[in-house]
Length: 436
Image (cartoon, rainbow, N blue to C red; front, side, top):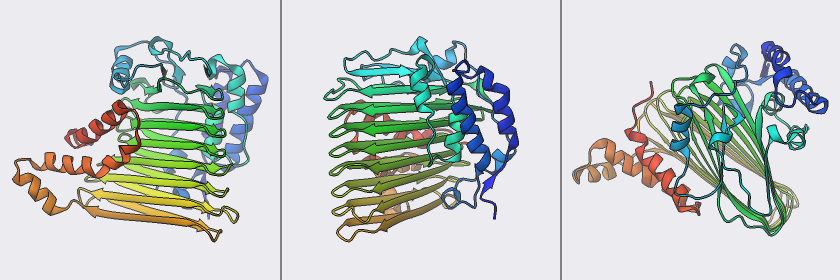
């Protein structure tokens, strides 16, 4: 039984572009790229027979090639996407990447004391460290390491609290048709540091491109990190993110996401504890309709005692939409006093939508409190009738019920304008033209 799919053209493409990739003039960085593409080629593209990929069918990648996108020239298109994704109510630095490359024209780099920020294309050492191989890297992570063009490195010193959120915006222009955009991030929170990071992904509607982002986040003792990510990629896009976090003792990690765009969207959140008395909170909403597929994959490794995790995900699917939630919590034998809760609910606005759910608990300790639940249901006809009897049309009534259904996902957002932006996107979702 073949678990991975082959596409030799990907390695051929690497050989063709390796001389022009950022950092190509540095032998040690090139060595890590070559190691990565070799690791990928030895494995291949995840196939649908792999359990964790059964709901995300990448068989087309065995036939289609997505060469690296080129840098984009300054244009009104870029400005338009920037204005759409930028949260103007928040004063603070913003870093923009276009087609996978740092875009200084719209960026204002952070300068707060105690914050060390750099983009990989301008920091060879950070770029080199970000490509460090890992025995547990997935095949697509290895492909990203081989072909990544840019990204960012953040290091926050101990006892530093950033006064303003940091916004990161990724834009894919119409010039990326049948091309790939690959980025990475490496973020380190020092002891007792605190920061909020807002990350947006947006792209051209009528363009088929493959966006892939890999992030590694480390929280030292007592650090507090808040992440808000929202994805409004083009309706033909293939969007993938792989987000890893590791928490030391007394650290707090909060991640909130909203997935709206892309034809095929997969978000992986892989988390682990390296110290006691730490907290992880993952929450997200995904909304899809015709030809859209959202796949949310989470894993929380409770390897230390006295740690807590909470997962809250809500999905809304209209006609032709598809989703999958695969959430796994693993409690190690010595991870006593673990408290883990997982909830996934999906609302179907049409019986032509398909929702899959696969919650998992693997518990090897005996003094724990763990729970999980998953439900799929339709709009309550009584609630819909009540709203329509008060003068709302069907679309407006469903929109209001949809907003109410997913609103609790955004309760953890401390930055008011971010929550407002997420709620606005959710409320407007049903009013947008149906994808074709």
